[in-house]
Image 1 (cartoon, helix red, strand yellow):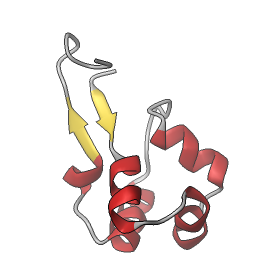
Image 2 (cartoon, rainbow, N blue to C red):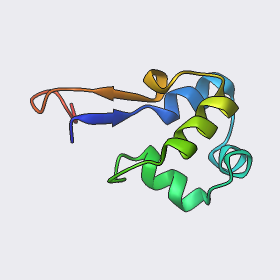
Image 3 (tube, rainbow, N blue to C red):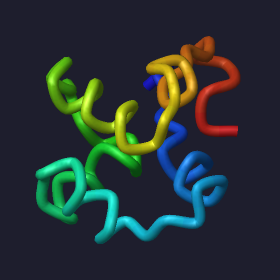
Image 4 (cartoon, rainbow, N blue to C red):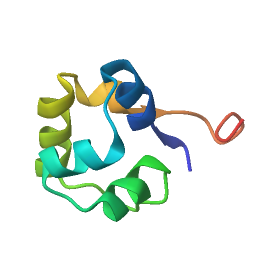
Length: 73
Protein backbone atom coordinates (compact mmCIF):
# COMPACT_ATOMS: atom_id res chain seq x y z
CA UNK A 1 0.00 0.00 0.00
CA UNK A 2 1.44 3.40 -0.87
CA UNK A 3 0.51 4.92 2.53
CA UNK A 4 3.27 4.20 5.04
CA UNK A 5 2.68 4.54 8.78
CA UNK A 6 5.66 5.76 10.80
CA UNK A 7 4.28 5.36 14.32
CA UNK A 8 7.27 3.20 15.28
CA UNK A 9 9.62 6.07 14.36
CA UNK A 10 7.72 8.48 16.61
CA UNK A 11 7.58 5.89 19.41
CA UNK A 12 11.36 5.53 19.27
CA UNK A 13 11.86 9.31 19.26
CA UNK A 14 9.56 9.69 22.27
CA UNK A 15 11.00 6.59 24.01
CA UNK A 16 7.47 5.29 24.47
CA UNK A 17 6.14 1.73 24.33
CA UNK A 18 3.25 0.56 22.17
CA UNK A 19 1.29 -0.34 25.30
CA UNK A 20 1.82 3.09 26.85
CA UNK A 21 0.78 4.84 23.64
CA UNK A 22 -2.31 2.65 23.30
CA UNK A 23 -3.35 3.40 26.88
CA UNK A 24 -2.84 7.14 26.49
CA UNK A 25 -4.69 7.25 23.15
CA UNK A 26 -7.51 4.99 24.33
CA UNK A 27 -7.21 2.14 21.83
CA UNK A 28 -6.20 -1.47 22.30
CA UNK A 29 -2.57 -2.46 21.78
CA UNK A 30 -3.80 -4.90 19.11
CA UNK A 31 -5.53 -2.12 17.14
CA UNK A 32 -2.47 0.09 17.48
CA UNK A 33 -0.30 -2.77 16.18
CA UNK A 34 -2.58 -3.15 13.13
CA UNK A 35 -2.18 0.56 12.40
CA UNK A 36 1.56 0.58 13.17
CA UNK A 37 2.26 -2.39 10.91
CA UNK A 38 0.40 -0.88 7.97
CA UNK A 39 -2.41 -3.43 7.95
CA UNK A 40 -5.20 -0.94 8.72
CA UNK A 41 -7.64 -0.04 5.97
CA UNK A 42 -8.63 3.26 7.62
CA UNK A 43 -7.95 5.45 10.62
CA UNK A 44 -10.48 7.73 12.32
CA UNK A 45 -9.53 11.38 12.49
CA UNK A 46 -10.23 11.29 16.24
CA UNK A 47 -7.67 8.49 16.62
CA UNK A 48 -5.16 10.33 14.43
CA UNK A 49 -5.71 13.51 16.46
CA UNK A 50 -5.21 11.60 19.73
CA UNK A 51 -2.01 10.02 18.39
CA UNK A 52 -0.71 13.46 17.39
CA UNK A 53 -1.62 14.94 20.76
CA UNK A 54 0.09 12.19 22.76
CA UNK A 55 3.16 12.09 20.49
CA UNK A 56 3.25 15.90 20.06
CA UNK A 57 3.52 15.66 16.31
CA UNK A 58 1.67 16.42 13.10
CA UNK A 59 -0.29 13.86 11.01
CA UNK A 60 2.44 14.06 8.38
CA UNK A 61 4.93 12.79 10.96
CA UNK A 62 2.88 9.58 11.22
CA UNK A 63 1.66 9.05 7.65
CA UNK A 64 3.41 9.42 4.31
CA UNK A 65 2.68 8.48 0.74
CA UNK A 66 5.06 6.46 -1.43
CA UNK A 67 4.67 5.32 -5.01
CA UNK A 68 3.83 1.65 -5.50
CA UNK A 69 7.38 1.09 -6.84
CA UNK A 70 9.05 2.20 -3.59
CA UNK A 71 6.45 1.05 -1.04
CA UNK A 72 7.76 -1.83 1.04
CA UNK A 73 11.41 -1.36 0.13
